[in-house]
Image (cartoon, rainbow, N blue to C red; front, top):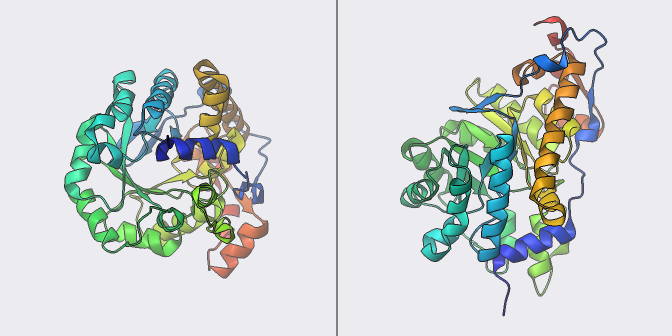
Length: 358
């Protein structure tokens, strides 16, 4: 009997792991020897769109649509509840097409009735399907994921991508909850982000490379692999700089950016927030802890991430996520070369005056 596609993705994701090449090694935090704060004064709350989160870390979209994925979503939801994290489910299109698997998504709300939960659909979704997805979870927000290259490599994937922006714009306008548009792991360029912002999108998850590699996953499922596409996309740090530049160029402060893609430790979380992200999505690293060590270990893992992030924020003298956005940071290496070629001024990051502004 063939393993359901959703569980194939989980198995391949765990087997292939994460490359860790997310680009954040090129992001250099500047030591502050006069931080003028204390550990107990650090606040991790952040605001993304209309939503206030108690932590900048989000358990990002992973799975759903099969019996075994229901178990995964249950345990992830328990960890989210215990640590106060927002959580997104995987694509709900499976449940819209086959209501029998809806329980694998609804379990998240059942386990975490008062938490922040994001529904999830692909860009092929209609407004009616988006409304169904939100209702299914009593969702606080909806993710619309972009996965063009994954679909093209996927043996049974989509081949037509017309009308994406128009559908997204209508969903943003009429679905009734905040909408986040996210890349699944190939990164997002400035031009795409500008188009989304013009369409009314106020939350963007940049989903760069360095984490779960959906090109490699789909190639592992193919009879004839297109391995030469396994390195497609841009690193997470670069995609973050691209989308932040799009927000700057469009002259809007209404766009919140989420950094996702191979982030597995508090240092990378901190670097993403310092660059300008309002939150950080994590998936593969948390899934691995859950599947290899269990739910209690996952809860401790998240608690350690929070402790380590507070430590770093104390060292930088930044008591809040917003204060981290004012901390100076130096961009080097491949990131700097990319930014120069793309006309992104990295001096604006290094010349910040936030250390002594409280």
